[in-house]
Length: 140
Figure 1 (cartoon, rainbow, N blue to C red):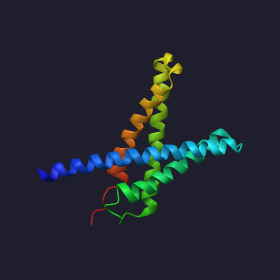
Figure 2 (cartoon, rainbow, N blue to C red):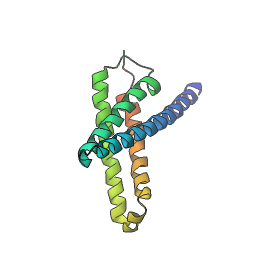
Figure 3 (cartoon, one colour):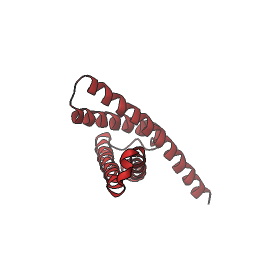
Figure 4 (spheres, helix red, strand yellow):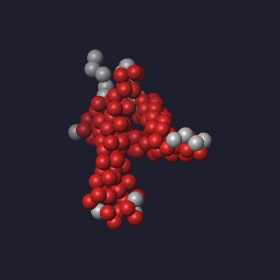
């Protein structure tokens, strides 16, 4: 019972830290996108770079702050796994965003709703797979 309560407490703390780190990553994403766009870099290329920058920053922060309990994981393989999870999460986000607009065309006037739906689903996916796949403790 104590182990179960401790695990749930750790999971909640991991979740909150993941949320805060992800929020910081969003700020990095927006800042890089705006700066590159201002410099005249093509929008899609700017978006690709901003996504990569935000994902790299959140990997570093999650590795050092959130999922630091096991540092024996190889960094390179972990980074590739993290980027894979983030990319799939981005696809989930975009798919839900587009499906919501397709299903309810009136949402085109309220883009924050499908944006939130996509982001919430992608965040859940990213957290679960980051915790269980990317940052999973290495067995001895």
